[in-house]
Length: 95
Image 1 (cartoon, rainbow, N blue to C red):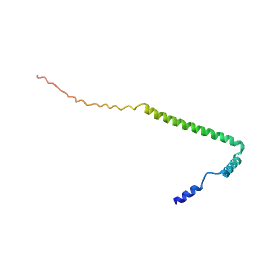
Image 2: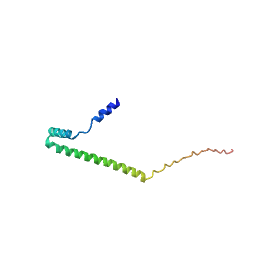
Image 3: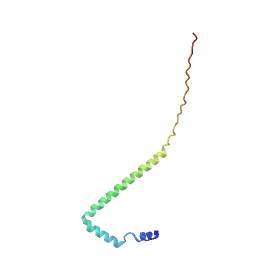
Image 4: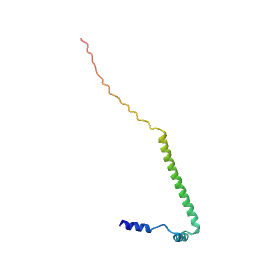
């Protein structure tokens, strides 16, 4: 059963030269020549924004890692208080 799945998976491959030509023709027919540059510009902007966001997250993560290495974590100080015993002494004076 699993080997059958692997065989089907290997039969699916990336499109070759003739398939790419058909895909490009289909895109030209569906979108027209004027819409494709706008679509590609939008795609480029989206990819650029994604890469900028990815780089910002990576930079912040690395800064956080460097910051934790540079500043040692303070050791917690534990203060203990010992209860003091209070004694009530009463003095009586003879009458």
